[in-house]
Each structure stands twice: as C-alpha cells, then as structure tokens.
Length: 561
Image (tube, rainbow, N blue to C red; front, side, top):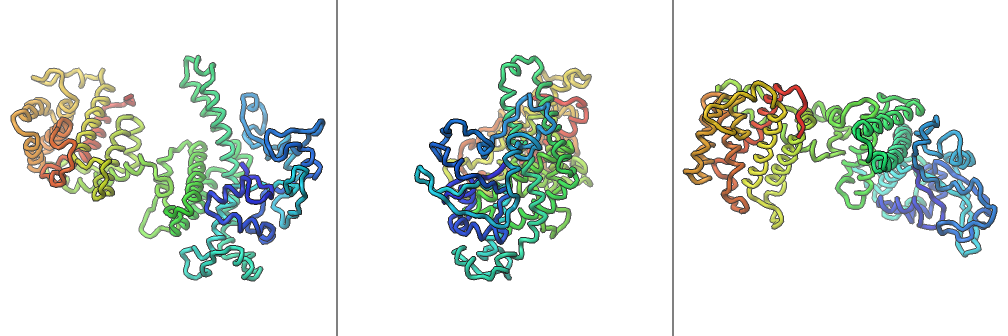
C-alpha cells in the first residue's frame, strides 16, 4: 500500500519508484526537507523511532534481521506484508490494510506516526556497522509521485501550456532560483487537493485487491478446491466475498459508487488527458509513469464493476465522448485500450460504413443494419467463438492499415491469408450457434438434396431458404480457378437482385475464402487489390455480424463453444 523511505541516500522503495517514473530522484531527494516544507512531497506518515532500536538490529540493514535478545517491539512492524486468510473474515475490518485498521500491530505502529508533517528532521547517526541512519521511516502513496511529476513538469516547463516557466534541466538550481512563494504553490497544485482525496480512496482498494488476489490464488490451488465437485459454485463464492470486501471498503470510506464514478471522470481521466497532451503516453522518459496511471484507473473500473455489477464495456461506453470537442478528459478506451474493445469499435465502424453500399432502399440489402461496439462485445459474452472473430477482424484491419506499408519479413502481407482465417472462424461460429439449437424443430428439418450440410449451407437455408442452391453453386468451384471463382462470387454480390440472393452469395464468398489456396502465403501486392477483395471483405465484416444477430434471435439459451 505504501512506498517506504528511510533517508539512506538514493536506495529504497520511494527512490526506486521515482527512478522508474523518470523523475530526477537524486536531485529531488537531495532537497527532501524543502519538498516536505513546501508541500511538494510530504509523507502520508512519518514514524520517528529511537536510535537504540536501530543499534539493536545486529545485521542492519540486512534481512532477515538478526535481533539481540528480548528486543522485539512495535518498531518491527515497519514493513507489514498483508495476506488475507480464511480466519480473517471473522474480523470486522478484514478488508482494510493492517496499517489502517483500528487495532493490531500495524495500527500500533501508525498510531506513533505524524501524518503529513510540515517539517522533518533528517539528522543521521552512524550505526555500529558503519551505515548512516536517520532514525525514522516515511510512508508515501504511489499517487503522490503522480502529483510530484506534475509539479516537476511545471517547473521544467515540460507542460504544453505556453504560459508556464521555461525549461529547467537542473531541478535543484530551479528550486534555488525561484522565490519560496512560487516554489511553494505552483499553479497546478490546487487541482491536486481534491484529486489527492480520490486517489487516496483508490489506494485502499488497490491494497485490498492485491491481498484478495493472493488469497484467491491460494484458494483455487488448494487441495480442497481441486477436490470440490462444484468448482463453479466455489468461484462464485470467492467473487461474492470480493464484492463484500469492496462494498465494505466504500462504506468505511463514507463514499458510494456515484462519487467514485465522478472521481473517475473528473479526476483520473482528466489527469490522463493532461498527460496525453504532454505525450507522456508516448515518451520513453515517462512511459512507466503512464503505465502506473493506467493500472490505477483499471483498478478504479474494477472496483466500480464490483459495486454496480456493470461490466467494463458499460464503463467504456459511459466514458466516451458524446459530442465533438469534449476533450477535457480522456475517453476510457484511450486510457485502457483493451484489444478486444478496440477491435469491436473498429468492426462497428466498418459495419456502418459498408452498410452504405447496401442501402435499405434497395431490394439487395440486409435492411437497416448497424451494430455498436457494446452489442458486439455482448454477443461475445454469449458465444465465445465470436470473441475470436472480433479479435481477428481487428488484427486483419491493423495489418491492412497500420502495417500495410512497413517492410517486415515476419508479417504476412497476403490479404487472402487473413480472409481464410476469419472465414474459418466464421464457419466455426455458425456451427456453435447451430449446435446450441440442436433440439429445435428448425434444426431437425432437412435441406432437400443435401446430406450433412456444412454450417454455411445451413446459414443460407435458415436465412434465405437457399441451402440447395448454395450446395449447387459451391460445386462450380471445382471447374474454375479459385481466383476466377472468387471474381464470379464478387460479381454475384454486386448484382444481387434481392435480399435472399445477397445472403446466398455472401455465404458462398465466406466458404470460398475459407477454402482458398491462391497466394495463401505470398506478398503479391497487386493481388491485394484484386477485384473480388472488397465484396469478400463485406461478406466477412458486414454479413457475419448480421447473420449472427439473426440466428441468435432464435437461440434463447446461451450457446457454449
């Protein structure tokens, strides 16, 4: 929960984390007293300890510590590691870190501390083992380094705002050159008064989350769990206990999910947007700082999901821009770019765009069809195979756009290779849905003249009553070159005179892409723009989501893949 600092030069948890975050740790810690005095970096807790206690630590500073007889006392709780066990659940504060519980060894240690001190004595003595020691421990939250980074950035002039000070490469020189009033209260510090409170709530949850993760890991690998015949119920019980702890923590903090949602929007995502403006998410110097902020925002979302029983996708939708220019805060999807979600957003956009090629006013259309990213991910929740389909579409489009012109011998450039993969996944997807309806009367009905129909043949029959025709046309593939067959199917899609014919040719195109062999491993760039490419793309990206939604309307139970 805390970063501990003991004033022994540049070593320790605090200085290591500052180094990870690209902060000038040596320069900053050399002015540690000034940072505390002027409220740039004040410890959450400062715990002074008697010099004699350190002298009685015979092998200081090594672990495990060698103690002289009869020297165990409250001071040894300076480094409590929190592990939740089954017996802890009987306690009223089992969801709290030992340092903030009302009783116990951790509480006794913290009760002897000074909270947010305005000054600190860093006078050192020389230990009998030759080390210089300041007899005290300071404890910081990780978010306090986010605050410090903002202040240092302001001082250096790294911010995008044009009216802030010029660049100061040497922070120590800067701290000496400005007036105490300027150094004491930089313009961007005021916002942190409220933001720090919200990050403080989150610090308690992150500590609980880590401790419960360890407990859950231990439980699911125990002999009792492995012998449990109803593991699903056991996992549900673990989830319920996690929710119980998350809810109890909210009550202890005297907040609620609404206040937490407001903090996510107005504090965490606003800070993320400010850092994105500064390009911290793309700057090597600050990349670890950005990653740490992402991790904390992820924990905030997970906490909210436990409290409200909403999904991550619900919050991705909730914290999206609703109109142009709303850029004070970052979109959640920009801060937490889940690959599945990004692929779903991309697919949704392509479905909308492709739909314009098949307007509802024409007979050869699928009607007014559009599907948003939330709906796509929701389908993935019902049919696991659809998640694989979404992910592959995202990768395919990425390879065709982001990496299309980059010469990388380890990346395949054949569009048909991706077509084949997505077509295979599509056929598996349809098969999974059909199996989920195996007891229905529709499934028992035979397709005239077709024995053991393939999943795509069944789709053609279900949605257009064209199963027999599907079976007849696909046999023509044997008499033509594969590329010529694809061109014929593409032409069939373009010239379809009604909805049923369009469905027929879309399913045939998927089948042809699935079985295709032309240039499967090649890098023929002319082939990538073949005449058949766009209609087959439409079949895989536009028709498949439409067909899945139509088929699922007749599948009330959730299919398992």
